[in-house]
Image 1: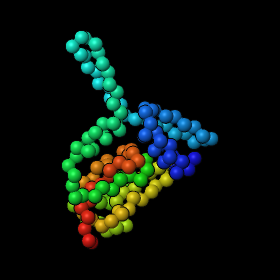
Image 2: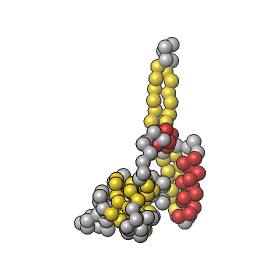
Image 3: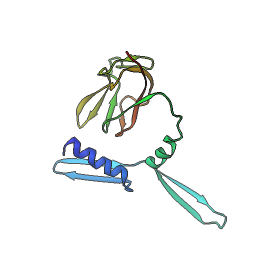
Image 4: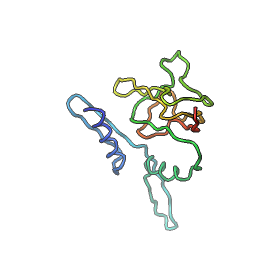
Length: 151
């Protein structure tokens, strides 16, 4: 299974109503889960109603409520583990307030035991870092907010 196949499976999984998917092809195993929250309410007649909300449903509702800004988002190109520096002892590639040029390395995403450098797609000032060092990130998750500049 190559990375394009994984993206395709991930994309279809995200758009589906499935909450969990386990896939084994040859020696490759892929397991996807959506975060879920069950909300129980009791109506006037005493009946209990339950509503299951997936993380994606919650995010779609709330993402539109976020204040629109002049900042540009840099999103994860694929699923993996995000690292802010080349090693635990090294200083982070960037910090809030840093000005970066197009092509500067912002971090590393480890996927399938391969380290992939994440480069800035445009020049700008780092306004916010939303990804946590050493934590899993999802496809299309916002990792950085940049204020675009002409640097």
